[in-house]
Length: 396
Image 1 (cartoon, rainbow, N blue to C red):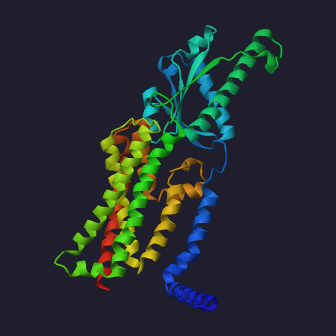
Image 2 (cartoon, rainbow, N blue to C red):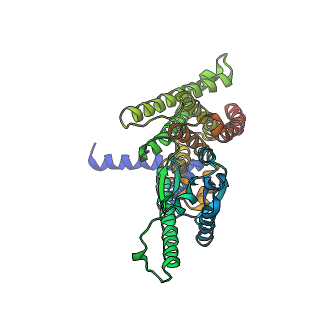
Image 3 (cartoon, one colour):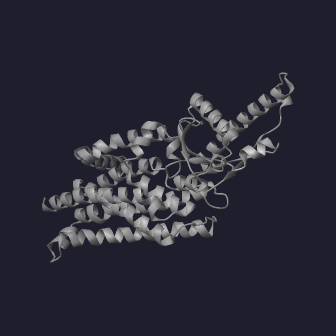
């Protein structure tokens, strides 16, 4: 066979395969939509700005609790006045330091400010007054930004206070260089002891992502591929209930995903020094619940597609943006507002949020109850629709 003949035959085969692609309407639509969808998502997931805007912050004035609120009340008023101009924070007053930490663990606030119990007495005696900034260690990038911004704000307030005090004392205007006294001793702390790093932020997300990817890529092969090969028809003809067939395939893919998730967790601890603050059993339970919330979507897609290739393409189109929009690598709070809204409709968002709180903050079930309820709700709705679609698909 000559070179020209070989090339001509190769072009015939290529033409035949291209015709097959053009006849697959769903595949043709996804061929166009997938790159547009992915590039659109990637273009908008990155932080829209480097500053704070309406960040929920808890404020606890322990000086007021002790009945010494004269100067701390002025501090709070000054902070609120500055915040009204900048719109940096959404301040909420709480009664104690424990409330601050509890609200951060529950996801109600992203940070906290605690005014020390000796705030007024220390300032009156010429000492520095304690102000503590409490960080959410489950989100180190956002925590670092908030800590830097709050520190700068409180330092600025301290400079203004010191300048005003010196001016009142000496009855003469003083510039900033002559008023270097820092009235506030700014401290930072987290919910749990020690410092967290970026890998501790990303490890729970990778665990959830790996399990999701394993399930979503495994189901097309387990169902669509066997349907193409004809082996699925053989199982359907056997004296086995269809739900048993589907259940067996889901169990197999879930097992594969859980094994991979456990490997990621083990490597995170052994190689990268991730300290798991919470319960390992609770982590595995969240991973299983995450699988339950997504398995219906996988079955639904494979039920509507005729080939493994089309099913895989749709899966990748959905899972790729899910990896980024769910907060695996980038904090959701730093994305544009409309992207944050989209993230609220993704089951993986809640699975990763729960995993991160357990791994980094060591919380229990009460602190992640909202995430658990939402994941369970996703699972019920998607699985109900998927089972109906699967029954119809097997009758075609």
